[in-house]
Image (cartoon, rainbow over all chains, first blue to last red; front, top):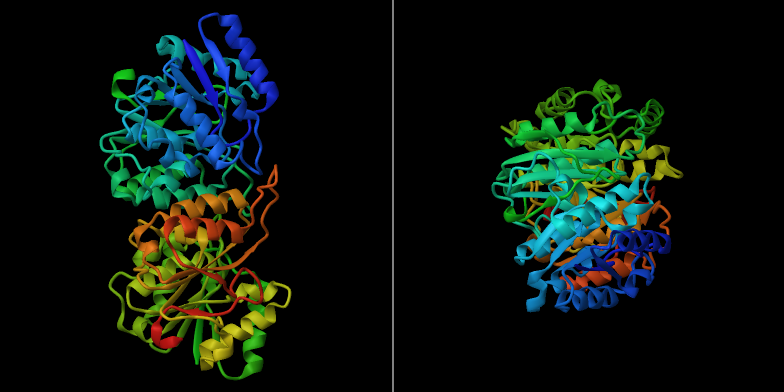
Length: 270
Length: 270
């Protein structure tokens, strides 16, 4: 299996690329092709919008590529997501696309376009504590659809997003149809008051109110609030789900960490 | 003129209350009534939702109160905004409501409900460098509609919001009709990548695309980006307006600072 790595958001770290390449080579069951665009830098981004889009489209159009693995998050994939799914090349439809965090903009756009996407670990995660396990889990799923890689309580159809990314794609051309979906969300590096505000926004959406249930992944690196916010993310989720008439389905095994499990969007993948 | 101060978001600092009370007393043209609720504390908030709502509704229903001045921003007014405008007491309609930042949720909800609202300085602003001028400007406008207090280039109907607040109220029951509006936005304490992401969200809205023009207030206390984002807020606004076909109207004299000018939402006030 040939897996192309491109970076639609921020620049991939060289040491991450080397560690993941070594890990993939040792497996012997996949060929990892890290696109040179991953190492470009243009301010915040891994190259200009045009450069990031061109690398992504090149990999999408390549019939020899079986899967596209987004290198990392950060910010920026929303800027090219609509263009990425315009006039889809036929070869784009025979691939799997994997990533999370900022790459959620692409998961949404690609799923809308009928492509096969999943929320899960990315190459840069190898730099986390225990990150080798995250990358191995992602490859186990990409290469052989290992069920052990999956989030353990999925009720397909499922989707997963970073909460901020979900909030930001509502009302845009990237917004997916969430009807009947098992929706998992996670968050990183946001104050509890911001999570509360995001939930006000997200749970007001009629589309979100049509989901089957909302599940809470891990919320990590929450900055200190002054004064203490007084409620944790579980309280916040339960309260807003209650206000909006959304079924809260409890915790989910996803997050910005090495334990992050895979959530395929396509019913047939779960 | 009797002006009631309530705190629908966070707790007002005692020293701010004392300084503003002294300033108002020295003017002799208004009576400032600072509701004891302003000093309550419940985690992040100036009292529970019920306590904040009760104080606000009490002031709204009081026929002796001519204006309601939101004490400060922070976060939390969105949690009570819809309830605040339910079954409006008649006395609520004969008042002016002034605030900004998180109070923008109330400005939106109250304007939708037909009340007379304006975006402008709040009591807690007295603690800023030169904050006495901000509070004096607000009172000059509340008491005698001093035209010098107004943002100087308004083309009514105008509205003004914090960018994050605007993004979070889109798609909610608080969202105002922006058709033909001179829309001013400002921001504080957000990374440039977040401002770019918010503009992606906001400019995708058909409602926002129906404005007359978008104007950029001050964007202050932008945290450092690593690496440097590479574009400032002016670039970001011009780019997203260009993408969305929104007329960019240049800079506006509002922001999280002592120079913040008043933007009345009602056509007849400008």
